[in-house]
Length: 622
Image (cartoon, rainbow, N blue to C red):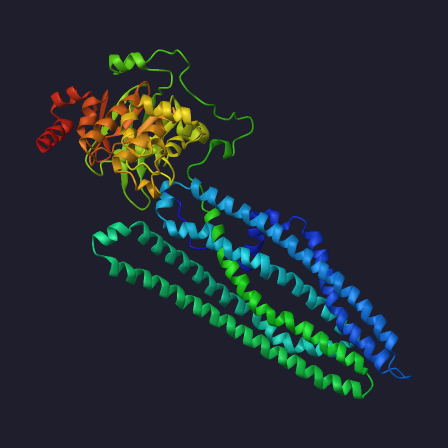
């Protein structure tokens, strides 16, 4: 069964942050020195209240009148402390920015790698825009918090602790009054945090939906215009934007209420301090300087409490983004490398299995004489052994398939739409794994082959060859290993594509545009064939794509495919029976069963399923 990516991880706030930091260990590099500098930076803020108290009591209110030298000395000392604190604060900023960028780069890389390692079924179950948003905008929310909110959180916690210690030194009673004023807020904060957390979680989900709708409409713009569906598409995007707007306003409303509550409790604490402190000063328990210093300390205390609302906003947004990223990373991989799977002690790792050089082809091979003469040791044998497969939530679509393909054989898999032939091709290239049974390459289960070896030995040429926004040469050279310009030119020549390239203004340097849209479907297929030729694989899985191209391009594709397949085992998912006519072996798939196997002439003479399909195809092509 296919894994699905959950909308968000269900971890709590603290657990989410802890898990996020585990995934980005670079964020915590040198954190001890950063915290030490943060202590120095916050300690510098306590200097001002202390200076005010000292100047007021020992200089301005001195028994012998104002003492200017004392004021100067204290002011200069305070200036030195403030400068040191400023330098420490700058160092904290720099260290946090560097560490956070390293950690976020780790998180992006890890998430991107995991998305690519997910099975095709898992990827297809998720909107592309939503997947992209998890690697980009969701990580960006973490970035904003770590670099700004996280910095403020560290400094504000230090400031809160410093202010509390200083208040206790000046007046434990007044410190108790301040804490009592904020107690209701501290009690209500966890509940408010949970509400805001859910609200921002909904916002991040709506961002993914919105980006998915927008990206899909951009990619499908041609179809939307062709069918006059612009207004309906616009309404769909408008609905996604409005849904995001409604949830964002809801989250911001909760944040604003929390901010207003913090302001109210801050005003209450300041008022209670003024009233209580005045009485204590009148009774001689506090000097004027101490009272003034305490009022400054209250401001230092209430500042972080008020800022906590904004930081709570950033934190919840970041946690919501972190959860969505973690949900991707927690999605189990179905297509795994055997080297990554745990094995009992002493069990050897699987080796790269292939036919030894010079080994003769099996006697029962149906390879034609001309192909047998060109066969090389690159050809691989294939075996489907009791293969069963069911798509997630659906019925079984392949039912106990057994099939052996000798090395060097060109195979055409034919069948009606939905018969299961495309599914067999995906299993053969290990884009999916069977529910039960084995797919063997030279006698080795594909699941036991290292993925690097598998991708080197098996190459899929899809029906729509995907091209990157670059030149034809760079697209041909794209693969597991880099290829030189000379190798690209040699491949084009050997495949007989030089004449086609001569019709293009810039030849190999022609830019193909986004997704290869500057080329026709057939031309994109030619580039994909040349790319596969350079990959030099043992086994080719071809999803035929010549049904919608002009005769000249079809001829080029057929000739290029013939040269690509020479000396290799190839399995073509045949949509046109002309491919089956030229194949060494025809495999007929019907309703998830292999019902016939043989050469084209044999199957036509047999008068079975293939004969009826071929007769129907001949009538349609006349």
